[in-house]
Amino acid sequence: MDVQQRIDAAGRTVTISGAGDETTVTIAHDYATSIEDLWDACTNAERLPRWFAPVSGDLREGGTYQVQDNAGGRILSCDPPKAFHVSWEFDGQRSDVHVRLTPLASEDGGERTRFELSHVAPLTEFWDRFGPGAAGVGWDLGLLGLTLHLESGVDMPAEASEWGTSPEALRFMELSARDWERAHLATGADPEAVRAAAERTIEFYTRPPAEDPEQG
Image 1 (cartoon, rainbow, N blue to C red):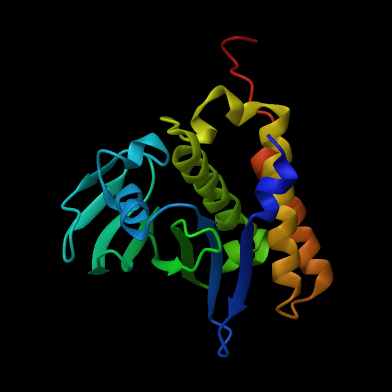
Image 2 (image 1 turned 180 degrees about the vertical axis):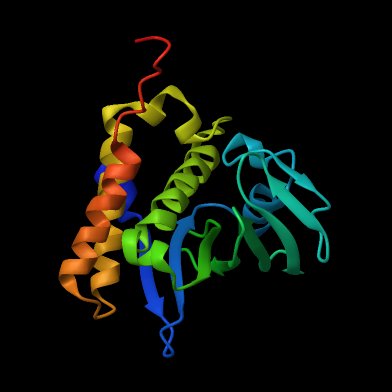
């Protein structure tokens, strides 16, 4: 794939609250499909494993959910097919994810919809260490899976396939982290600290897996 083109297709923004205690990482991507189809891809428990991960629970407003081997939480609001808001609870930490879908005008008459996800979290030492890329690269990988699914019906999240450890995948993650670095710099944060956080994020996502001591 054209990795740079895939990166450029998404918009990334970072904001820090006026009180300096909350951060928001936002990623947006336009898709050549109807809002109903995109909503179904993002909320249907039978479809989510095809591009994201298995999700169990009572997937309706007021219910709970659990992403396999990842976060869980509550579905705090749901406005089909436009928006939903969930708590994102993992390893004792709580943040919030907001997803908004917006139909777009199309010059060729076809249907297009904008997907926008905002991840709102407290400002912590983890942010100081890794910046927005820690969450942002993960969401980039998720949206890549969604993109491939909508384009060609792919039935496996990109990072879960053999592609996930390929040079192309490592390049994708590095370019994603660099774009999040640029979005972080746009907030006026200290450039040296921003670059250091981006480097740590790149190392985290692209370093080789630890060698199994039993295999030598």
